Amino acid sequence: MACFFNVNGWKAGDIHYQMHPNNKVEFSIHSNPGGNDTFANFMLAGDQMDKWVHITTAYSSKEKKIRFYVNGELDIENDWGGNPGVLDPARIGDWNQSRQWEGLIDEFIIFNTVLDEGDIQAVMDDGLETTLAVDAKEKLAVTWGSLKK
Image (cartoon, rainbow, N blue to C red):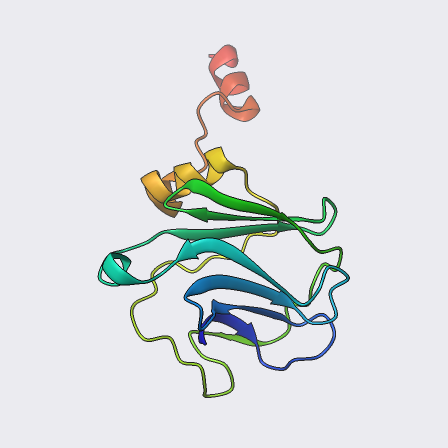
């Protein structure tokens, strides 16, 4: 296994997000009602090994769904979950000095909301700076200021 992001321990609620030995993206929450583990269909193998791949996992404990996206497109949606998981101290690319990621990881991001396919595509195509930029144009304070002129 090679880690994208793993909470330092492995107790109830801990999150592990890694590449399983079967070469599929795996998302795990210890003691999750839907089972500890769920997998993408996508396999990082063969001709994918020397290419940049954009991988997104969107988990909703409310919906009890997890969606895996590859290069901005839905790979698979699994019924799974219910446990919101725990974001205790963790490491990117390593788990307790084992399961080290062999390769490059760029822009690892955790959002506190579930992104939809359009949001994921925008982050992938335009990058974080552009996607999350705040534009003052047409905001109340700017509009009010221009009306007072």
